[in-house]
Length: 119
Length: 112
Image (cartoon, rainbow over all chains, first blue to last red; front, side, top):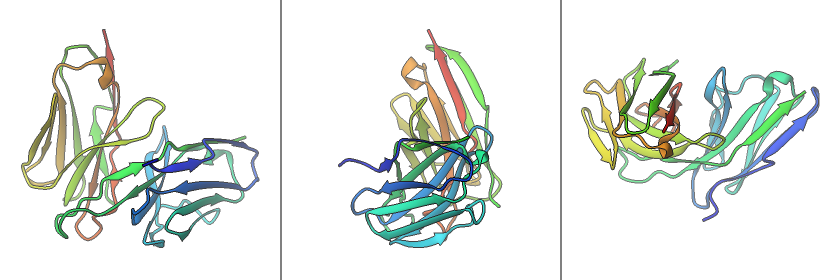
């Protein structure tokens, strides 16, 4: 299994430009998560999907951020327009519920991340 | 909202010394997971604890879930340079078991 795939691995862009980050989850996983990691704020959950449907987007910073999951094997996180404070490492993770209904197991598999720099 | 704090933020030990990181949640958790992130890498799942007072071991690593299910700890015996990285706890609540709130992390540095 190739694991979670993210692209690009590095992105440098100028303030005001649109940025699109891409993620391919592990085949068969039914949950997909987008996280942002910075030194100041740590690892923050932005949004997550279950069976391609957004479940909780309360962590999305503002309207400049949007995420989609058009099918089970692909998701995007878009920032438009980008700002310097969006500079961070963005991780995508996927998981599959295993075990009985209670307790459930949701071990998350993280991708390598996209390091975004907005100048 | 739920907050998960870890202490210490950073610890530097010499190889062979023990290390412990503590995790405290503002709310009762249904389960807790632990992840390790190597420098420049991504978080990697280590273990999940579900039961009150549960203790699990993985070689030199011992994980414990508190009786009240609001705190947890990770203890490493006789650290090695391969243990270098940041250790995160992550908790979830009943009803939103798929959603994790990550702790602030403890960065471990090990020198010879």
